[in-house]
Length: 298
Image (cartoon, rainbow, N blue to C red; front, side, top):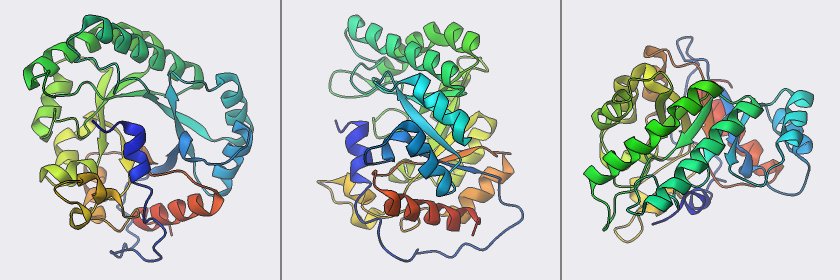
């Protein structure tokens, strides 16, 4: 199982191409999305304040951080106050290793503790979501077991989420669990809680054959956030499906105009967060420019 860090690193290859495959005209009906990156994408040395200043210079408005992590939250808060860069979300950093679907209840307990920490840290930094991959289906965990176990563990964190004012954002990735929009709708709705929603990745879901815009329209108000990268089926091979991420933002198979149209239809006016490999100022400037072209900002 490829973990999230490896997944992001694979997306780094090939982003330097100079042109995009599609043309995106400015449209007054486009959703008003705010640009962000994963904090770990900001490469090189530097204090949180210096990194936030760089992001501000490149016209980003926010970041997502990992938790639990070694980050010093007080330094991040000071950087936030000094620059205006928002910490809009937190990513549960243990959900791949200590899965909430694991057969061992001790491992599930560690996963639950990680989720609670992510929620707690989100409140501290002023974020409104904690991203969670709820479980993994594999040789030892069936779809039904993944659903039942992860559901039970997420329910245990609902009180934490409500008290913190932080929503648990369920993300579906290549974990062989939720592969259809109807499944994600059912998974989120079963909690009957305003503190559980969906975190959607347009590129991840290309693998499963349902257009991203269809996912967005079915999710509707359940969609709390979404990630931004690129995926090309022509780059993938039977032995390495992850090779499909070896394209830059805007160079993949995503129908971005239709994605943005769907976002506008469901009233999504929130964050679009780049999830590609990290790099220096030149690299991040390219990411920013690519996002601007797709979002109709330039």
